[in-house]
Length: 521
Image (cartoon, rainbow, N blue to C red; front, side, top):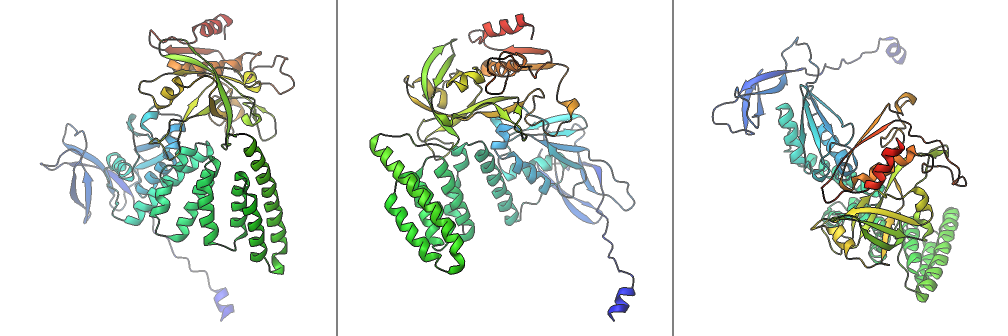
């Protein structure tokens, strides 16, 4: 029988072709308001259609519906491009892109992609644009699944089905996870922890709750919130008392806090949990880790007893406010100094350890106390320094900041006494040079440079001009350490034009702009 089956030709089940769609123009029934829904029958099936808002002059609406047999498929006429720039990514735009793809699945009229660059509405993130017949319409504040569904309905005329609670919850959780991932990558701990404790408390699935609790403990520890992290580490260890990784994680937290005696208890707990001869290697690994944590705990205890020490925050260094110099009616130049060796360097390195030319920025933690941006007592703000990478290497950083009224972070900074401690992040890449895109790794050699560059800047955004133009100057562009005094070949060789907009009483960096012009950059 097996031989006969092998000799018989393989029976393949044909997959039915996907349903083709076509554009239909349908007149909106009387009494239906703009944005309202009505039902039409098409090829024996009832469909819910959304009326145009604002309404069209002819009182009709265009939508995509299944085409009759034999219809030739049309190319997508509607494209939704979702912004993936910094502010939108922090607001969960990666999840918005996935939501639109899932809600628009099966609609051949719709093409979904990431937008090319920033859409310019950062204060209203996350954003997307709907492109239809050459016309672009900006859609902002897509912060809920319902808004994403409304966007798909307005773009295609087909209303997504959100009646499935499992789908709604899955999309909501995906957005939360993406936003946290982005915040973690940028070391924005307050933003990463926003709403996470509430998710832990609301989770009905114990396994999922413990996963969220672990993530919360990791974020708390990175942000220097050791007491909260210790409480959650203990809960995780109690849920899995014989799990060596939970024991080692708990030892790490205790080591930072100087709890020597409790670490000794963890060693005895590890020996009981890993008493099986098959666990010998794992016990040796856990014991080495616990011993290292005990050394850290002894050091932390001795230092803490001698002086009050600022707790480290992962990704940040301690700086001091050295001076604050008003440069206009609304803005001031703030100078910070630091001897903290953890402050990092702006000098980028590629995978081959070669010098990578980039513009860079830092994040400042403004300790304003309780706030709406997360559970931590600070808000996080990005700034582009106007000082050079060489200044940073020497422990100096100048930031041009406009004071907003009311302004949460700038109001705090304006009242900060000289000499006060301020946390600045390690330098983070903004753009590759000379391509001036966030990541040029996918570009070919011909696309790296430009025949010319146009900078459109406003207000304190003039700091970006300094960050870019220093890569056109042999004296200030990046060069490897040890060659600081030698001029380097600047990577930015294209001519640069600048359009700068500002208030009459807030003209910034005028001498520097004049110098760039006279130098013929």
